[in-house]
Length: 152
Image 1 (cartoon, rainbow, N blue to C red):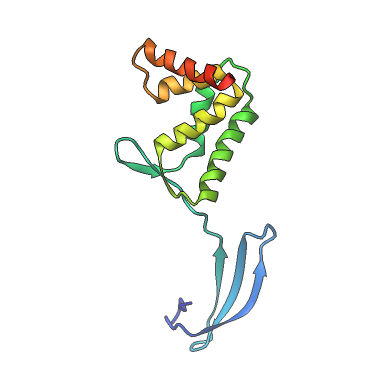
Image 2: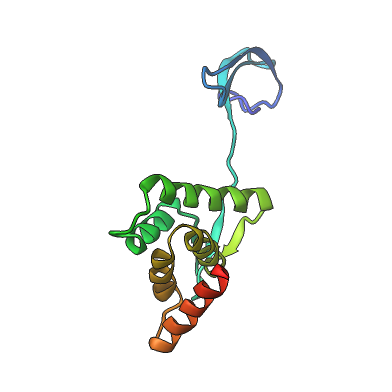
């Protein structure tokens, strides 16, 4: 670690302590060249998921956007906030476990649809109609056939 006083890279760790919640390690160091003591912190760096949108741009993965979209589709439906938040968390967990740090927005939409279909078909249809940009009644008919096929 570079000494903030003299810039030397020669130091030794004098003391190490872990934070109460275990997310940070605090280290007291001493420069071997000028004897200056300083503190450094080690933190766990979370892997960040990046979403590649349909128009080619990218943005950081945002759990709140998924929750907001599901809430809109589930308005006045028997879908609880806990279920909505669980869907979003399950999707994030799945992406991290699969190591998908760059993901297409369409894949996220498909994952949401898959989960919503199991909970409430009306919410699923609402979400799908917006996400897949339904243009006419035939799009709805095809989606309804898909729902009916899954019931059989």
